[in-house]
Every structure is written in structure tokens, then in C-alpha cells.
Length: 123
Image (cartoon, rainbow, N blue to C red):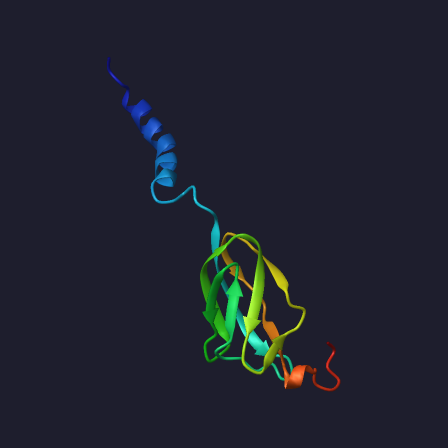
């Protein structure tokens, strides 16, 4: 029996995505690389060395308050941020992570000042 060359090309073209998805974790849970910045509420200054934790993945902010977390599970995930002398208002927070890449807007921390918000603060 002789196989027509057109059939072979069509067969490989249809099967290739299935083979690629099966080799290398294509069936695993969807994840994202999440980026954002941590800023101070009073003046918008960057908060360096803050610890950001989303869905069990954590990392620290750089000198400019920026962070990047790879491998964060997609879906609704808990968000915590901690830094010496600051409080995250509204905690616990949840964020929606989309597969691939998710960019969070600025996360704003309030100076602790003994647990009190600064005078005139809206929180």
C-alpha cells in the first residue's frame, strides 16, 4: 500500500500540536509572570526590599519598588505585601491572575506609625 505524500503532510501538520503539547508539560496548570511596583501612599515613593507574595510565590522589590514573580498560578490568588514600617491596607487581598503575563498596577503601602494612618489619609 502506498501513502500519498499530501496525506502524510496533512497528518503531521494536524498531529504536531498534539505531540508538542504532550512533550514538555503542556497539560500542567497555567501560570503567569506577574510584574508590578510597590509604592508609599503618602508621596508615591518606591518601597524597596518589600516582600511580595502571590499564590505561594514570593520575591522582593528592587530599589525602584518593582517586582517580578514567575510561575504564579492562574486564577484568583491571595496577595500579601510586607515591608518594615509599612502596612498593606485592606488585607487580605485577592488578585485575578491571567495565564502568561499579568501586570499589576501599583500596590500602595501606608506607613505604620504605630498602626495609625497619617492625618488626613483617606483610609
